[in-house]
Length: 64
Image (cartoon, rainbow, N blue to C red; front, top):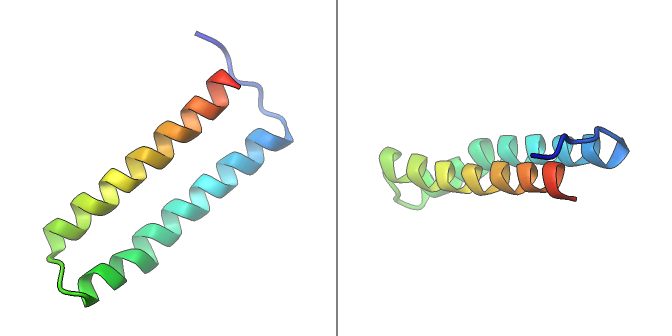
């Protein structure tokens, strides 16, 4: 397993991922509930999106 190097691009990727997660759970979650999705459905959709973001971030940090 490779060790990630934390340079400017890695810090930018971490900031982008954190912002995307915050935006998704805060804004997109409200939009889903406003359009008729239940609380459980909204959490499943947001959790799946969060998993994709975190996995993409880990892939970027370890395999670039």
